[in-house]
Image 1 (cartoon, rainbow, N blue to C red):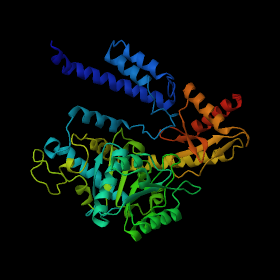
Image 2: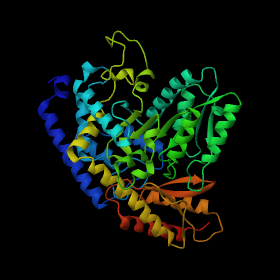
Image 3: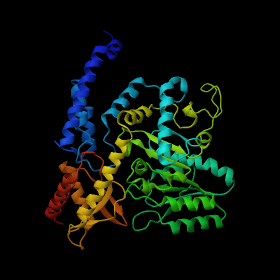
Image 4: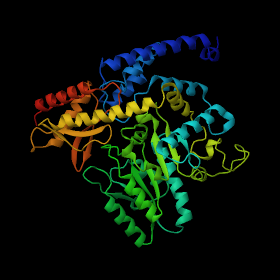
Length: 467
């Protein structure tokens, strides 16, 4: 048998696929129960590189097992770290189908079904945020960084018609994700053209300072390209006041963009939708399905209040791809950076259709409730300090047995020890010069007992730590 025949052998593929699904199902069962470690931390990247350089490939089954065990267990009930989803099995299976079919979605003829499915998914997002279904539109793209850049580029296209010749500025919270800076840099803006606005005690953007900076920019002869509102911030999960920002943007004729990569999914929760009140007034919005919507990475919705803005951002002429150059919803390369565009839509569509939108509502509500419950628990622990009242499923806190001493160093040591132990996975962040431990409650199986156990483990490590 030739190598090509072997690579495409149907019965081998069938057997290997069954083995992998069985292995993943066992892995899911173990992580739901909390068996084994969340992570087996390898402190030396060079040693890990050497390991895989010298890896003896004995079988596909063993290889898959080794890969699973050598990386983070995001389905583990004690994975409470980064904003990475624990993908629902149906969505992961749809992702496998997309990988295998490998139909690029840049042009309709390559992926007729996928193109239609993406449009349905985008319409569901537009409906959820409150956009008018007849006048709004959008696309899916590969991740929040690319999605935010797409929104910024659309804002620039609009800006050039409104304020030609004026120096543009982007205004954003100091707590905003760094991809806003990357987007500005990609567009050729200098550092001083991205203005960071201070935040209030709850780490949401200071509305008074925002308006003052806008007035100063206009008085100096420039204008604001866009105000980027956070829904929510990465460090603390704080939501900016979308109503106040919308009022300011409408008053000054400024494009309003909402980075809802993590927290935009709150629009699917009846209980927490109000935290996104007035989001429908934004000109553009992004929401990651691979954060709070149980979907594998990458899959991000970029939504536009006016559908024309989803076409003119990347307006091009490419006769070898397109027969026409007008607003064709079905030729997606006209509206995204990607031309060989991944069929990410079926991961979201399968989830929506198989489980219903009620799944997303239940998940978001549960995780947000749990963060609030954990904050309440920590607030009555005399040796812990909570940095903020949680607005999402993100909470920052620190072990503070006394109000003096180097608490930053103490909590740094605690976090490092937790990472090396591997029984919990949390991260850290810096707020106002102070280091805090940070949890993002992502697994649908994490419960209060896990969080209480985490607290006890932190306390145990803290007590045993001496400077």
